[in-house]
Length: 444
Image (cartoon, rainbow, N blue to C red):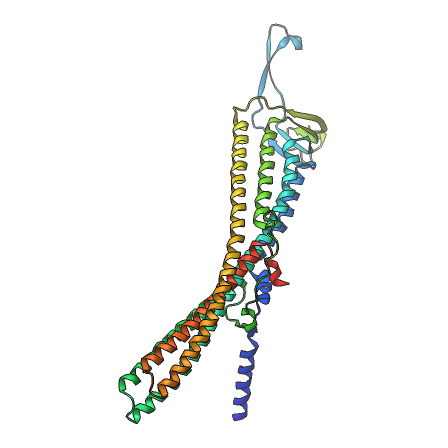
């Protein structure tokens, strides 16, 4: 039984380890681009654009259809005609034309010869495909940015938990010292109580941080399209700070956000031309071949002996449509399309300014955060040194417990400030990479 129990424990332990995934930022981004619904949907839109092109192209191809009908006329309409044509001048004859039963079957063809809207639609369909391809790139960049920012946020919370765990261990050691002093009558009970309260506060904060880590990890997995139950671990080297080498100013017109707006402008221009096609005439070819059967009985499978006769007929023609006056409806649509173009052009100007602002701000934040990181490094060194000296002084009776607790708080705060500064730097780094249009470099 003991042997079986050990085997079960080993199996459970192995499964738990197997489910833990070491996740670098590159791994997280690559996983998201394959599994996140947003990325998948953007690729489906690219695929769907091909079908839209086929739909528009079909308007330029021949349209062939088959038709058939069966009609029964209970009462045949009569027509009044002059009897002179039938040798009875001065009289009128009421004659019925047609048969009780009529059936027709045939094939018809329509081919557009000139239709400006069809030609414009073909150009628009190809531009639509390019629009969705650019949109796919933009969606991938948005997925990368969300995953990267959340990845670093999770790491910061984990670092905060490490600091709190370390602080809890150190405070426990101080508690043990104070308890020993109290047991020997060298410390007051209030001093021991203060240490116990501080440990309780640290433990409470640890629980809160653990909860935040769980929530932010779940958010990260959601943005990646990863099952929530997956256990992840993050390598420490992913959070190292390496100063960015600033290259020449990026070309805003190569940014995906700008390109997609320019493609929208192109589509709106084509839409305006499609509306203007309403001013142009259209010309189409029509052709049809039919077979008709008539008689007093249902024509299907009936023979001439029963008075049913079948005959064929066909027609070929050209249809010309020339718009002359449409009540100014076409002109109004053209002007609406023009307003949409001018409105988008304003968005393009504003977007160029916004993208340039993002680049400038990212550089400023990078520089400021580098200075902050260096300052916080020095603060951590000084806070650690002060804590060490204060602890020694306390043990020698040269410092109060308040001084020791204050030094511990200052050390923890300095370490948290450093961690936050690194997070701000990493987020600014992502913003800079985005402003240069190089987010995909994170997966290379």
